[in-house]
Image 1 (cartoon, rainbow, N blue to C red):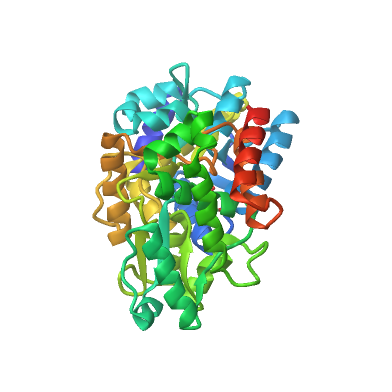
Image 2: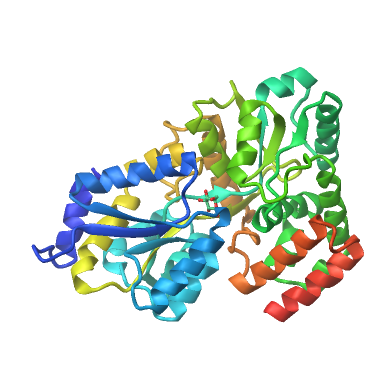
Length: 414
Ligand code: BGC
């Protein structure tokens, strides 16, 4: 299907010619086992169309390193065909006039009708499509080792206090309760869930989308920091600097009970041949069920020379095909960015993810992740990372001080 669509898209765009470069150059940070497996789905689809793949991987979960590399390539006038990108990073490139225009393909295939409006804010600029959404990830998930859960007699935690009680049980049983990678983006990603659980999703929106100062300074925000501090007590002593996928591996092996992480963690379970409900369990972060704090991976389509445009359109077309959105996201752990993709091929976590996105979208509870650059531009999100990480590692010593620092840092970065 992808091949027929891509061929027609290229035809529509004005025809591919012998002079076209049959290569897709892609910058990304998908270097873990699960991520690489997902990317292979795309490489294979494009290979079927006759495109070779020029990989530009920049390791580092959350994509900070990749974004630095991308900036250098764009500044040198040598952008990739496309780059994996999150939220406001794409907006910045679009506003700087660095992105191309794939609107004719988008219109022809009716993407505006199937991609949630919230996401189109990031995939379009002044009505023109300049990026494609590959998936919808969300950060407010917990991933548990099922055998460890059974061993300690644990049940699904519904509230933050339940969660702490569950972590206590694991600790008493000699299992590392919380697998965490102590890197700023991971701690910030954890804090997204803690804030939504502590204050509710409307509070999250007020604080992080509206940057409402009274919400940022509130007792609820202080309590959120206090709750984050409670979780710190359940990590192992080697957490500092650990990569996110190594933390997932601790849960996969049963060394740790749970990881709080976006659903890219599921890609690691799948890659390790583990099955939902049998080997691992997924729940929404306790107290956030019904809400989806999202970060969508997009491919930003840069301004490329004429002879690379057909390849760019072929990539966009392959990415947006229904069959690809299913196959890729089954492996990646995320859910499709198109709302018309059947959930048949997905496991129970994926089916829940798909249903959650639809329900949250209808209820106004589909909200961009602050940690993952979907709530605020990179400078503001970076300031958030800084304060959360300083608090987590004890440089900022109290929740009172953390709130003061947060307000100051966000105001400076705005
Ligand atoms: C991306 C995911 C990726 C994760 C870890 C997130 O920012 O959206 O696709 O798997 O980082 O690398």
